[in-house]
Amino acid sequence: MNGIDIETKRKLREMGAAPLLEALEAQDDTLTLGMGFGERLRLVVDEAHSTFNHAKVEGLIRRAGLRHPGADLRRLDLVEERGVDRQVIAQLGTCTFIERQQNVVFQGFTGSGKSYLGCAIAKQACQHRIRAHYIRMPDLEEAWALASDKPQGATKFLKKYAAFTLLVIDEWLLDHPDDAMRSMLLELLERRYDTGSTVFCTQYAKKDWHQRLGSGVHADAIMDRIVHNTIWVDTGNHNMREHASMNR
Image (cartoon, rainbow, N blue to C red; front, side, top):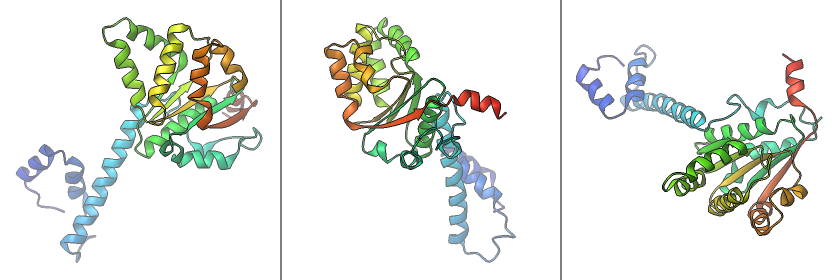
């Protein structure tokens, strides 16, 4: 669509309508010859909306801090060999579990692809325009320790991590959390209960969690806020890092 004057371009940019302007300038008059104004406008808006949506999704993925930003549920290897239920993975890919505020646990041996699956789910959520975030539990502990030393730091920390619609915690219970960390986890999971979904990637089976959480009342309370509304996925014992290196 040619003939857009400089002032009109300026106004469109000022209104934050740069994708619309780009779509207008890209429209080929020879291909739209004979179309009415409404049809041409619809094509322009469709193209601008597609560009806007792509930028929005890419921004969500970038801010999610994924360990594996290229993770993709459509490119999983050795699904059947690992005993992973493809139907369960496909269902998770719809992100309806997030609408139901369900949690997900990926549990399996070291190198069995838990982190990849967690990132793939988070990326899928971003593509559904859902705000997601990935963090390793050791990094969560470090962030909590730093926040605790600042005025209002603990409050801001909890508010931040409670606000993500989907939170992926990798290396869950890799270390035994101390009293302060257990108190934080309880408060965080309480705030997220029935408001968001949390994905836990861990090498420890559910039977081991209570002991690793200290075996006390905090362990009881943390477990209570996780296990009753959770989809459990066993990722098996295949070493996917070894598999990936052999297929390069």
